[in-house]
Every structure is written in C-alpha cells, then in structure tokens.
Length: 232
Image (cartoon, rainbow, N blue to C red; front, side, top):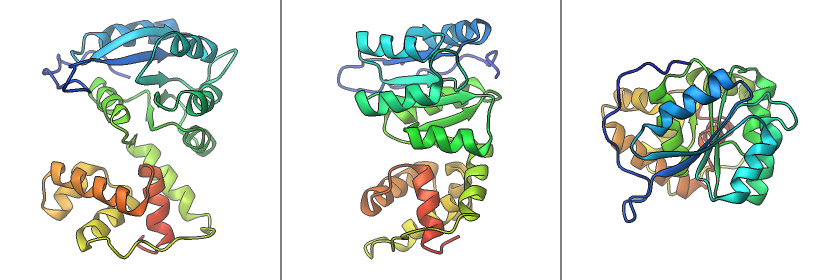
C-alpha cells in the first residue's frame, strides 16, 4: 500500500447540501499500517477519520458512539475479525458501508467478506487514490473491487453453475446490456468507456440505470447476473 502520492485536488463532499465530510474509521491490527493511513486519509478535504481501530470490537464501539459513513476494514484482526465485524455492521448499522483493505485476495476471503456485506474490496497494494475512490463510492452506495479481486470473483462464479438464474428484465437498453456484459468480463469503468467509445461518466449513468432496472445490488452481483444470463 502506497501513501506517498502527491496531494489530491479538492473533491466534492458526500452531501452537497451540508458539505459534510465523510466520517471514516480505519481498522487494522498493525499500528504501522493503521496510524499512517488514518493520518493520510484525514488530510483529504472530504474525509474525516473519526477513529482508528485495532480489531472488530473497537470498530463496533466506535460506530455505536457516533454515526459513520465508511469503515476501511482489515480482515485478519484479533478478538473480532473484519468479516464478523462487517456482518454485524450490515445487520445493525446498514447505513455504514465497509470497504475491505487486506493483504488476502484468496477466494474464501473475498466471498466471505462480500457475503457479509462489504461494499468494496481492495488489496494493500492499492494506492491512496484507489482507496479514496473506493471510500467515496461506498458512501454513495456503489461497489469498488480491486482488479485482481474482480478477476478472481469472476473465475469463481464461472466455475460454479448458477442456481435459480433469473432472466434480465426486458426494459434494458442495448447499451445497458453491453455494459453488463463488460462488467461480467471483469472490466473496470474506465476500460468499459474506452471499449464503447463513451465517457466514464456516461458509463456510470448506464450502470446506475442498469442496477435500478435489474435489481442488482453491487458489482459482484452484476458479475453473477451477467454470467447467469449467458452474457459472458
């Protein structure tokens, strides 16, 4: 994980009406990771790191004390690990999004975290810009997966025959089906934009419309739906 990148340009906060910065918790059992990362993120204009936690129980206590938008969660921590803490937050504080930041990118860890309710999954070789982007996306209800993680998830889903596959709704446009196909192939938004010769903002609009029409929860769910519909 790199934290020595040049300073970010100012970004819009999550809530344009109140201009409230996003309240974030950094959870990692290693102080040498947790403290520098919390300090770097707290320098971002639209992020306010309200706590740094060494395990899942500290995360839960912090969230219980004050509303939090996003928890940046390590998985392997003592006392209560990140997966269990994520599951608890999903059930008791659904307004708090979880972005996993971990060294582990094996299938079991990925699937367990996403099944527990994590909205994003990054490995610790992610740069600061990737982490900030994932935090903002999670706070906005979107999902961001590390490219390696998305490829592993795609490979895992492909090897498991779909059960109870649902057809896609008839109201999808041709472009929305194209976007879903490319998501199913593991492409990030920028690559989709280049493939379709449209802007990244337009890709995001198509994704938002697609997810709303098809009842897709997040990008991982989109991969599953694309494969189940025979698009990949």
